Length: 424
Ligand SMILES: Cc1cc2nc3c(=O)[nH]c(=O)nc-3n(C[C@H](O)[C@H](O)[C@H](O)COP(=O)(O)OP(=O)(O)OC[C@H]3O[C@@H](n4cnc5c(N)ncnc54)[C@H](O)[C@@H]3O)c2cc1C
Image (cartoon, rainbow, N blue to C red; front, side):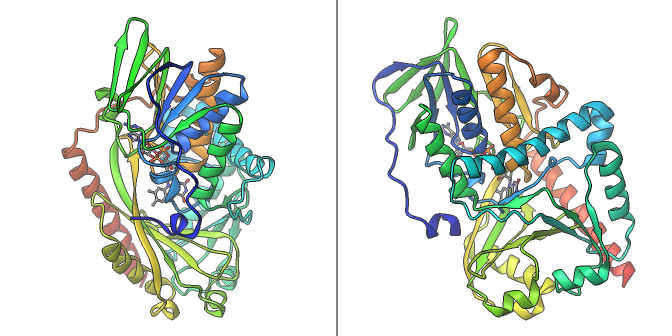
């Protein structure tokens, strides 16, 4: 199910799988943002002989299909993060994603990555009349995280986002939106220029221990290395049971409309990306050629493009009734990986096997932060990894975990529906 991102650009020349036997200093499995950021981080720290293996093509997974919002924070909300990690560590963890947003911006410029970056912030639009949720998040961010999100009163909100669905909003200025596939491909090219060997169509089918080293098998090829990083997100690697069974793959959906011309401007008078305050929120952003990219829903089911389109068109018409008849040209789904604690799992078994996964639906900045932390740890033994302690590899107990996740989703969806009805 190719995304609009895949369809609109030329497919880069494939990078052939490895052959024969070889050795490497570090092998990274997974060509999404977690793997690519780690590869680039290692190369930047002078580590030579890094190999990255991707089962399909660079950005095939969530990284090349997502909404393209680059913003701070994690899937776990800031209040829950504060409760679970305590004030000091929560602040440091959050700050790491702010640094990552800045690093992504810098990399796009320094590496001249042509990914349609729009540095215009992100709006959190209030679906409800009740202002308390916005006010309390704004206060929490300012007091505990040093983040200054601006309040947008209802009148101003309707100037920017012309939908009767919303009331007021919050504006996160230090955020951007990008074509994530173009960005992933740009990172891959930069990593290659820095000496990383990248192989596509290279599913690692076996990982085993040979004395103090690891052996990875890809087709008939064999790579031996002291350090392996598993970064396979919701597209489970199937190589280490403890790592695989700690995440739940969850689907979410995106579609792109035809170019809307003036109809887009009638709905959106901002270049910022927008999402709303419900648990199962809509998220969308204007594209350069007046298309609208629209995403939403969370499901344990990976639906067909036609089903995705049907669901999302209904959501779009609820927010912008004037776009009810807009033609949808692309619709697709992607798998996110969730841990029970909703935070990334970044760490090591202590025997040269590292992992970076469970970035959920909020992965662009956190994968960048994780790549930097892993690169530091592997290259210099420096331990910024301790920051992620306490967010470990708790098993998700598939298939029961799916039922629990679906139950939670329905519960929150129903809660939001009731709140909406009560407000009239
Ligand atoms: C539809 C959608 C919208 C989203 N929107 C946003 C957003 O707007 N902003 C945001 O911050 N986050 C968003 N996210 C989340 C974000 O995309 C992810 O958190 C992030 O991309 C995860 O990166 P990753 O590298 O961990 O996983 P992935 O990008 O999924 O990469 C994993 C890779 O591992 C490969 N692989 C698996 N097994 C093997 C194997 N055995 N051998 C070799 N390779 C293997 C897969 O082929 C895959 O390419 C969204 C996610 C989805 C699905």
